[in-house]
Image (tube, rainbow, N blue to C red; front, top):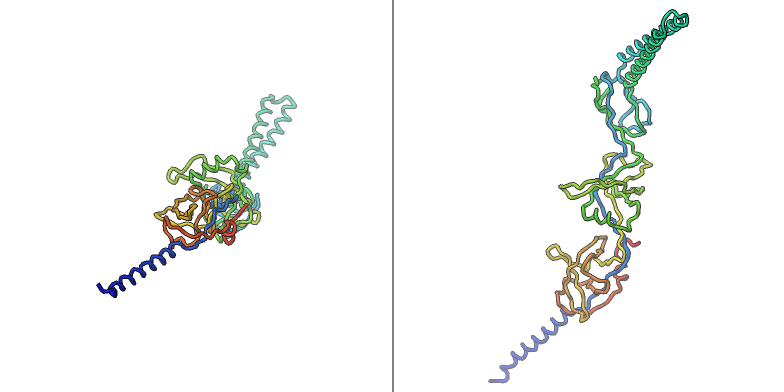
Length: 359
């Protein structure tokens, strides 16, 4: 065979070798590797909360009658004892006048009976009966005064009133709603906690005696007063598996109102937490993985369990040790089992541009 016939085969063989060398060069890139940062961190766990006034009641008509006067307006701050509503009192004023007149008659009869008793004209029992009759008349006066006072609806405590549910001239039935009143000096925020997190909370021996929490309000700002967890409900909700916590917040500037919503921020401390950048992870079928680099610089795909998610970083519950080296760049360029050239970066430097709240 002519030697020239072998020339194309030789060229193809050399090209294949060159391609193999280039491919080998592509699968062994020099990539950044680091180890997890081990640090005490505090994570704010968020729960949706409902804001309630510590005292929130309905004010209702105590007697039947026409609403004669309204002395307050919607949204007004009222003081304890302040008169808010007046129901037409004509009947009760008349009853009071009758009972006062009967009390005066009873008092005159007692005086006359006492004079006769002093002269031994009537028996002592007659004097006792006259005294008892006066006491009864005076009790009826007190009762009539109470009925009359029922026509004046007063604030039972300092608070903020809500909508007016009736207008002047309305005919009110006994017990009819007039408005609601909220004491906003301190607020109760209720939020639901899953069973597992409840157990972590109650079994944490290192938790403070009074757990302090914060509140993120609807505009995204964090309320300027800290709250304290003061109560936990006695039973779990069998439908959701959650249990309700109650935190009390002082409200000196009356910013919070009954019925608001917000997110309760409960700090969860982690001692010597294993923290890695989120960019070092990838997801397959809802599971998180990292590439761990072994002593031969070979990549091992390893599943991890996330304890907490923070801005740009994860706190790891399972899957990594502080000494593991992990790949932090080029994750899409490599596969499980590839060998790489390592450019090691200290964990502090790797985290230097990441947001991390550290204690």
